[in-house]
Length: 593
Picture 1: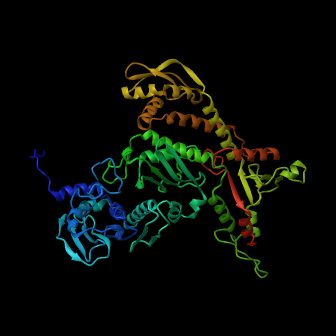
Picture 2 (picture 1 turned 90 degrees about the vertical axis):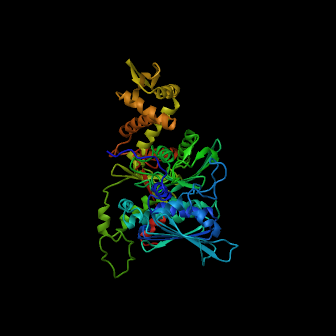
Picture 3 (picture 1 turned 45 degrees about the vertical axis):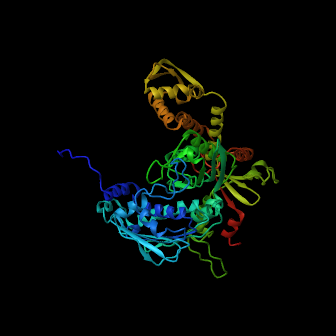
């Protein structure tokens, strides 16, 4: 057993290494801190170069205001900063702690070379493993160059926890993209021996974010996204969200910013997940670029040294704004199909490459080249039912000007083929009707109280007193959702009714989950989610089944109802309900364009 040692003051080098454990988690953390410093200095051009995934070299060059020679020792001193006034709650810069540079210098070889606009010469200072050199003259352009070599050489145990150079380089690229998205007016260049060069030229002024977003996420995101713009009680939310049928397997492409600061906040991530819960399966994630703006006094960015987490004064307001704004945007978007779905279908027709033009001497295309007989055989659907033939009418009975057009045929008793003015639409009848029934059931939940079933004997559930308080305060809302409960002593609630839709359910588990959610988010979404899940199951069993032959009027009625129902572009499981092929794409397949 280790004996008790006397209390003593830790040396500065050890203090900085302890701080480095929080601020400098990996090379990407260093890049984040240095780029934020450059932006706070007013840089319009930032160049980042790395080697060895950032472990061998990180160099950041900016054209900002620069650092005067006499301030260089302060720049690498602990808790020295030019970015914080007298109020820790009024933070308007990206950096403010004054911990990054001394922390980096304690675990790496750090060199800072800088020149201000009014100086004839530059100056340089170095920190190696916590040991600071004297300031010396150096040739330098206006701005600052920070070079970090041999990261963690002074704390070799940390190197064991680093990933490979490729993974670390990818993390650096992600950090740069997140920061660049918030500053479209700044030029960013990321290069190095361990990666291809990433060039992000200026994309306009501070408010011209769509152009920068297109640089980072590609033009396809713009074609498959919706603009969000909402405000509630002084909190503003702007940005873009992907349509449900254009999703990803991870949440890596969810970008969130608070007052221009890139964050990875659990509350925001949870709000996004909750807003898309009805239209995406649990293993799929929306692509988002969301910008929150609020009074700096209403958000605490000082929660963690890395400044990636934030804490809102009114977390319920922020979460409600995000969830409500996204759901309202989705509801008002109308019917939209993902462009990637049609692209995938076109690729299937092409067989991985575009069809070559047919010449009189070329009648032997290989399999996979387009619409040769072999390929057509793969798509042979057998006899089809024409909507016109079924009606015995040679004229159009439904206008093709509608978004989903007029039904023309049903294939394999499951897929409706419709024609619009400029495209071909293929609808999965079961998936589409499943969404329509589900939305109708949800409207029923919203418009009238949920039917409840009385328990023969009340279930008394012991809880911490604060949880019982929260549940009692939400009792009227819970009653509308079919859960009847009341206070039972200081630290318990008695449940007398449960939602009839749930049947036999784990009442104790449900109430405890509700208490946890109310403590974290001040909402009762757990109960709502369970009811919605039951409604989704009922919709799946009550919808038009695959294999059922539909009359033309039934097909067209389904199309019109889809057009009028928010979220009908995907089924309850997040799969697309229809695919649209533009006439121009079809003509390309046949070599007409």
